[in-house]
Amino acid sequence: IFHACVSPFDAATGVGGACIVCGDRCEIDDCDISLCQGCSVRTGVSCSCSHLRVSHCGANAPVIACAAGCCVDSCSVLSVTGSQGTNVLAIQCGTRCCVTECDIRAVSGGAISVGNDCVVECCEVTGSGGGGGGSGELFAVRRELWQTLREDTLLDDFVCSMLIAAQGYR
Image (cartoon, rainbow, N blue to C red; front, side, top):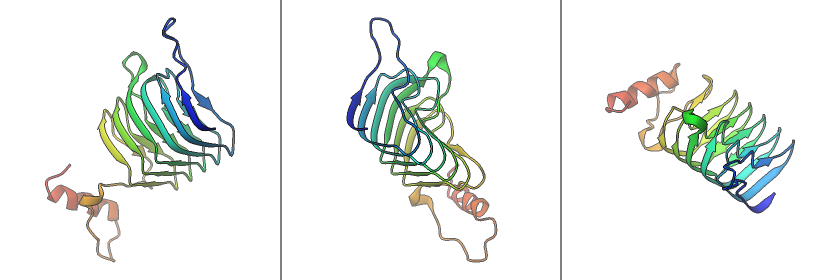
C-alpha cells in the first residue's frame, strides 16, 4: 500500500473501523490516516510500515499494531484518545521488531510497547498519558541524557537510571 490517504470515519453515523489490515510480509509506505475509530494499522509478521502519519483518531486498540519481525520507521502518531476514555498505545510490536525515527504526540495511553529482542531508536515522545512499555530487554533514554558507562558495569540500565536521577531527572 503506497501513497494512500485513509479516512474511514462516517460523519453521518459516527462510525469508523480499522483502517489498514495486512497479512504477512506486506509493506505500507507514505500513508495519511485520520479520523479512524479502530486500530489504524494492523499487520502480520515480517511487515514494514514507514512514513505513516496517523492523526485525530479515537482508538480502542493500539494505533499501529505489528506482529513479530516487523519494522516501523519514520511514523508519526498525533492526537489519539482512547474510546470512551480508555488509554490506548501508539505503537505495539511483537518480538524481533525495530521501531525507529517515530514521533508520538498527545496519545492518551502509552507510547511504545515491544516484545523481546526489539530495537527502539531515535523516537520522540511528548504528551503521552502513559509510559512506554516493554520487557526488561528494552531500555531507552533521551539521547542528550546518555552518559558512557564503565566497561565493567553489570547492571547498565540501573546505573544509567541512577546517573540520570543524579542530574535531577526522573
